[in-house]
Structure formats: structure tokens, C-alpha cells
Image (cartoon, rainbow over all chains, first blue to last red):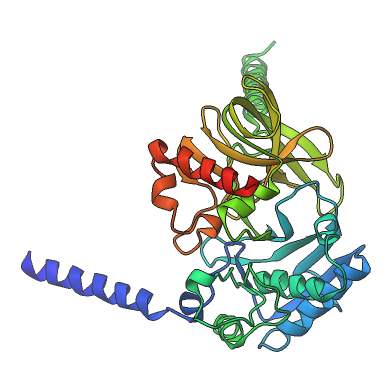
Length: 182
Length: 202
């Protein structure tokens, strides 16, 4: 009995250490996205009827993804679908979810859907916030979660994954988090 | 009719009856295309409110209300890849803290419900409203005569499955930073909300 208990304890400890050993940049800087992780490094992005603002956002998001080890392209399809429109809501500027093929065992998503709300974005002039939004939502398709003042390093002001400010790029923490999972 | 033929017919009839019963049973148990609970989570880049008074200032209506009904709402972008169907939530107003609604009024709130595949989802942790929920709602009108909640933090429940501010996560309190403990206590939540409304109008 004592031997069996020791053996079980050893197994449990090993499993626990394996789990703890997989902490990555997500845990340190950017909370993992609840929409899921990309299933591989190749990211084929489709754009559907985007306005000039929406297209600016999509281009910025793609460029930011390509600063990481992901290979994002508008040539080909099947990983990310981007739409924009007036969705008759007053809460969000952009939203990302796993549209299909979510694997509950790996947390990977086959096809992400990104929506930009043109009515909400109409309150801004210029394209800077569109670029920030594109960076943010495409960041979700790379598995990044939101970052907040409460969980960010002091003085961190460059990440587009923040909700309270509008940077247009990923910072090094974002890039590290993406690269750790592809 | 020979014995063999009688036996064959008996088996055939029995099989057909069994098949018919099976088809009826399957039809009766076929699930609705809309899930009854949310199964997905959507990450949204939201409006950011620095403080409770900023949230109250943006809201056209702040009420204490009770959920009396929920159901399927309108379908937007139907047939397109960005299709979604909203959820209608009926609120009976118990008290109006901001706005012109009288106590006892009923209003319809529209929250996000299902994607184009009928899969229910929530945005930034704002869980679906359920009949019997009671709390404080920060609302603004939408097209079509309904109201929408001002972001995932725009609801504070005093009765329901999860009491306190909606959309709350361990490292994300939004405008309610420093006030979560008071908001999770039904005895003190009202005072926090009233103070927010008062400051927004000051």
C-alpha cells in the first residue's frame, strides 16, 4: 500500500511539474485569448466587403503578425475571415471568435471570425485607431488575450492588446507570446 | 400463404413499424438549431471607462431592474458570414437612477446570443441574462426600440448566479477597480451605483 501510494504521488508530481513547466509568455504578460489559439503558423486571411478603414485595419494586423513567426497572407483562405458592418451594439469596436473547428483538447481554432463595427468606429477621425483595432483583433487570432493596466508592467504603453489605449503595434511581450505557441 | 411467407411478412412488418417509431423518436428529439446555453467566448475590443462615473455619464438610462423573460431576438447580417442572432431580455424596472422611465415600466434589452451556426456565445465575459436576475443596468438605446448594455461592465447583479459586476476577471475590473467587494455585497452595491450616477451628473 505504501509503495503504491508513493508511486501514485510520483506520477501526480510529475504530471503537475509538466503542467507548471509549460508556463509561457501568456502567463507573464498577455492573458490567453478565450477565442482559441491558431492551429499552425500559416494564417490565410479572407476579407469580406471591408471599408477603407476595415481594410487598413486588416493590413496593419497582417503586418504585425508577420513580425512574429507567423506567416500571414491575404493569398489563400481558411484561417481568418474579416467582416465589417453596423452590428447594432454599443459595447465593442471589434470582436473575434472561433467560428469553426475549435478543438477543446488543444485549444486550437481552425477558422477565426473578426468583425469591425463601422458605426462604433465612426466616432473617430483618421485611420490610426483602425490600425490599432486591426492589430488588436488579429492579435486575438494569434492567441493573444487582452492586457490591462492591472496586469501590465509599469510603463508598458506600446501593446495594441490593451483596451484603454490605442497603440498600433505588438510589443516584444506580445511577439514572444505568439512565438511560444507556433 | 406458406409458413415461410407468413414469417417473412411478420418480420418485414415488424421491421417497418420499428423503423417508423425510430424516425418519429428522432424527429421529436432533434435539437433546436440554437443552443440553450452559451458555448463560445468572444473577445471584444470595448469602450474603456476609467471610472464608474464615466460609465454612468455615457449611459442614457441607469435602472435597478429584474429580468422577467428572455428569448431569441433579431438576426443580423442573415446569410452572411458575420450573421448573428441577438437575445431579447425583458426588464421590469424597479427603480430609475438616471433617465425618464417610471418604476413598473418594462423595457427590452438586446444582448448578443448566437452565431450563424446557432452556437451561443458571450462577449468579454458578459454572461447571458436569466429570468430572476436582478441588478443595476447601464443602458443606451439601440435601433429598433431596444436597449443595449454599455459594455461588459455595464451590469451589476444583486441577485443571480453570479452577484457583482459582470465581465469581471481576476485582473480586469475595468471601471469598478477598488469597488468590487462593495459591489458583490447586495447591501452596499446600490450606494456605489448611486454615487457613480451622482458624480456623473455633478
